[in-house]
Amino acid sequence: MAEPSRAVQRSNFEQLKVYQLAEKLADEIWAVVLKWEYFARDTVGRQLVRAVDSIGANIAEGVGRGSYQDNRRFVRVARGSLNETKHWLRRAHRRGLLSREAVANIRPIIDELAPKLNAYLRSIGPAAESRQEPQATDD
Image 1 (cartoon, rainbow, N blue to C red):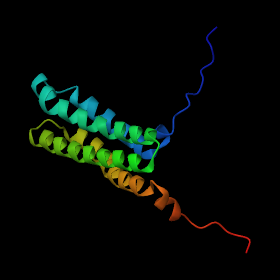
Image 2 (cartoon, rainbow, N blue to C red):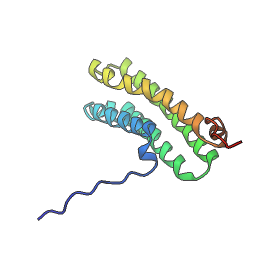
Image 3 (tube, rainbow, N blue to C red):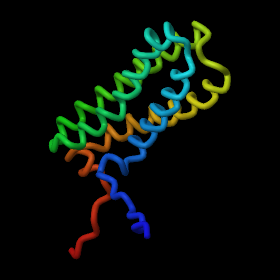
């Protein structure tokens, strides 16, 4: 008899919506690049996949670093990787490598991810905690 399946517990970074979007974008781009011919995969595709995978990897690494400053630094790197991803997507589009369907699938994820990445960056650190709504006191 098979053992009942157990729910896999996610670590902190995996629960972040911004990380989940980064993962979704990376998976979508991977699926697109796999269909390209060798030369396109080896040039633009390789760079594009590295850039998009770096977004989620830096979010995860920042969470694991243990300090607000390090986390913020890695989220800034993730933001840079998102911009690099946009650059390679523009190159791929101009070179006729992206179908309309691929663009239609990728664009909404990027449009949602970019502001969420900025919001996540603003939310990290003691200054972010002080901006939270004050607790009621018994004065």
